[in-house]
Length: 180
Ligand code: HEM
Image (cartoon, rainbow, N blue to C red; front, side):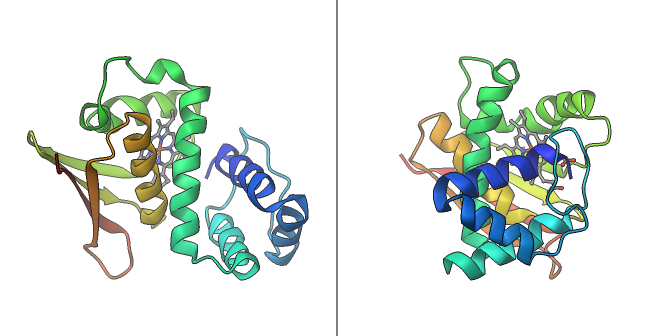
């Protein structure tokens, strides 16, 4: 996993829970990297699970929720960092339609060793279904990024239904429906 994901996680923890909590979870997680992340470095994605598990202990907030909150937070950061990846007139569905063939393709040009999920996407006027595939099993984080997209495009009438398609969590279906 690219370091930018870790540096942003620790920044969010610092902002929402304080520097002491950020330091404490790094210590308690016993990380191979020791938490010395640089944004362009690459680290074992399991470290993100170790950090979030420690944050769950410290905050009492369920790790599923923490991953979602982080995904939503990171979406804003991605928008600030890479505004040229977002065409101005887009809405949530047309944006999500570009993830596989545009956004994550550009990400791979920036970070050649990025490990990205695969999405199969099915779309009609009222709904969009995305099937997430990844050995990193970060579906709750993906859910948060989707919430971030809905917030960004100001379409609060869109609801997300998440369903596991495998026991391990490496295949997850997200159905987004416009209720208005
Ligand atoms: C709502 C839209 C998006 C979704 C659902 C999504 C989903 C994901 C997920 C779930 C991961 C974790 C890796 C995995 O599960 O295998 C990931 C990684 C990543 N994504 Fe996306 N993404 C979205 C938009 C974006 C945007 C807009 C950017 C940048 C402008 C971006 C850049 C990245 C980067 C840098 C990584 C880390 C890759 C690595 O660590 O090697 N994503 N994405």
